Length: 322
Ligand code: NAD
Ligand code: UDP
Image 1 (cartoon, rainbow, N blue to C red):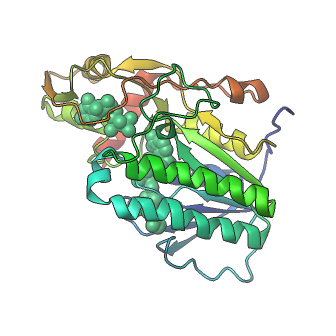
Image 2: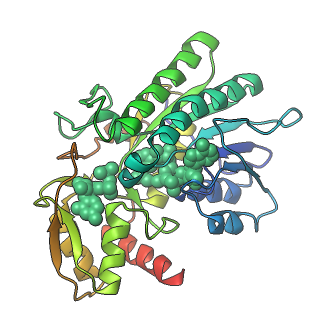
């Protein structure tokens, strides 16, 4: 495999980002705008924020279309598109019970529409997959060759299985139509631009710690996650986009914490007087999760840079500013 060479500028390139009003996709959009690219954002705001679009719209190279990507895409007839980033999907477990059909449709029909556009335009396509394709993993840390342990009818299946479908559809377009595809498997990521009421663990713990409320640890808190700060994730995704490898790459930060440690650390970092309370563990909650990022590191200079303490402070500052 060849070592990844990152472009110093993307002037003259057009990047289409589906889900641009969301947390990770808007951070990615900013990255490409900073590199001089034109960015076209698509979003229907099901979990995204207008404020993320307002921020990006300050740059004259950003164009936005309010669109549901599994219904009809805008007419891009005369528009050159170099890269298509398939990032539109709700990702918080609290949404899995509320909007499961929307989640399944965007990851299946939405991905299909974006792949068809990539084929038509000759664009490179990147699918934002997830560590959830490994389910409740039986190997630790997870490597890309592990095929997963997913419950197809469980409460998380609308997300896990539709992302597995999206990966399969991406590879099928690559094999059948020679579309130039990439797949990233994103592990737990947090940072500014997340919604404080998103429901995932880091925004929950930070908002609870800031208001003095009890931090809600689900179960006994021995389950683990490995948290990546958003700008570190964007750097990893950018490396994969610029690679020449169509097979999936894990993207994340291998620093692993139990949820009890996470709660205690956030209380300490934010100097909070909050206590911890335990609530029931949701069904099928993965017990351990940590990426092996050796595959990406073998072909790039990628390394996560932001320390947990600094990332938590920056996210708390963002929540305070809202
Ligand atoms: P997010 O909810 O903030 O962003 C997703 C965006 O997609 C939202 O703005 C939402 O409105 C939009 N969207 C959803 N359905 C749509 C549709 N049908 N049409 C148009 N727009 C639609 O979530 P995020 O955490 O930023 O996740 C972004 C992507 O990264 C998702 O594909 C997610 O599955 C993936 N991912 C994220 C994480 C993480 O830890 N943040 C982990 C694994 C994978
Ligand atoms: N969790 C928790 N308290 C919360 C929210 C989540 O203890 O208020 C736990 C959850 O049970 C899981 C972990 O934190 O073990 C990560 O949950 P999250 O919803 O952020 O993402 P997941 O990795 O489960 O998709």
